[in-house]
Image (cartoon, rainbow, N blue to C red; front, top):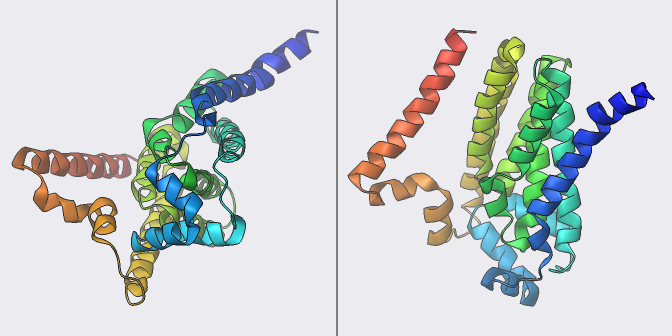
Length: 267
């Protein structure tokens, strides 16, 4: 009886908490809302996919062409929310596997915060890109798990590069998302810092190069919209910022790089 109670407390209860928290957070998502972009997708999927290409979000188009031949706004939440719950549970087990110091409560809490954070939530606001965003999240989590595994370094790098690069091709914001996760992994998985340096950082850099190369090659066939360039290729917006905003952006970038440098030299 005591063993069953401990099993529920240590294994089943955290999973129930993760499931309930993520489901309740995204429960309003079941409301069948229609934005301008969503209406465009329903009326003319081809037009919307052309818009994605003009913004450099090639992975979005590939997933639609392979998996989503006819968009249905009403069934998206029934696909996305279970996938988000699965991503949270997967992250929970990843943290439990590699972080021996944190408690089950801490691992479950971080899994909830990771899935329910404003960055993810904001990208899911437009339902027609929600499934692809969740696939990108899984690519990130799989790449991190692979980077921390005991497989051969070459296998880990190749696998992580492919996963990270595909997430970038889905949505450019994953470039910054994965960089944040690298900093997090440096802080949490202290005994694996050398492994993170050998695998995760090079994989992130190579995946970024793959995206920029894809973006450049596609520019010979695709006319990129000014909206896509200004919104998603963020360095083009820098000249438009005020002096204080430029200083703030520069400070944040230097702080992140300095933090990573300190983590490396104190490894």
